[in-house]
Image (cartoon, rainbow, N blue to C red; front, side):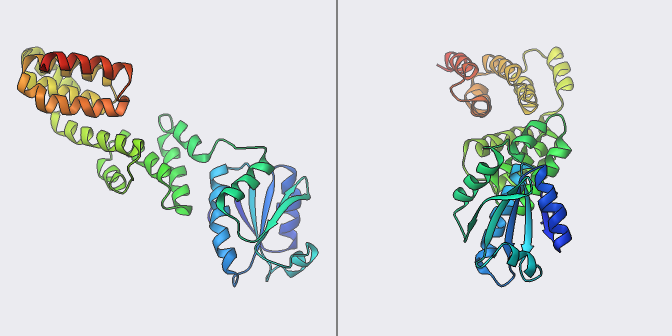
Amino acid sequence: MNSPHIVDIQNERDFQKKILEGSQQVPVVVDFWAEWCQPCRQLAPILEKLAVEFAGAFILAKVDIDRNQRIAQYFQIESIPAVIAFQNGQPVNGFTGLLPEADIREFIESITGGPKLSVLDQAAAMEETNPEDALAIYQEVLQQDPKNEKAQQGQARIYLATNRLNEAKQIIAGLGGDNESERLRKLLEMREGASQAGDIQTLQQQIKANPNDAQLKYQLGNALASQGKYAEALEVLIAAAELDRDLAKNQVRELMVKIFEIIGVRSEMSDAYRDRLRAILY
């Protein structure tokens, strides 16, 4: 696993430096394992996933007992997998055997002082200010956990924000049905529609010359929504609906519903514009 939070112990010098000395700075969780041990193979991905997720709150050190027999003997490792946590150079807690992920997470939290801001939360906070670094974090998580939907959703958000629609489309096609996945599908639909509508400035100039063109206002609403300017988009769409009732019943209504689903179906903004559209239609 290629992560700065996971280290492989090659010898006793490594053990001294990376575990005994390293645990003076941050807890070190030592995974005693062997190539022939099937439960070890099942435990390793869970520990590695948590090491990436906790983003430096602890270090995972892997010790192959066949290559490091003296270390295993010193700590009286008789059954594997065996996990021992070190703090300040001393073993403080541990367990033997394969446990459920929830129990292992609880064990990790007990030595790190409780739940930490996960690496996925950190990446999400970076999406607007530093999207490429956020994307790299999502990719690191997915290397360890290819089905991690939160990381996939994060990738899709960045691809949508940077207008990489083909890449976003590939990821979104494989997402499940939770609220964020559905929101991303609506965003993708709007982005694809907006790419055909034209840019905002050009549309605004065209509307200035043709103020009663409902189709142009619908296209502008789509373009604005694709950039997250939802209040402006809804206002323009209402103006389009007022000009063309047939357009209002079909494309305008469909686009407004997508926006409502993105900003929250029962949000104050959605309620207000839903009432205004209803007044036009009925």
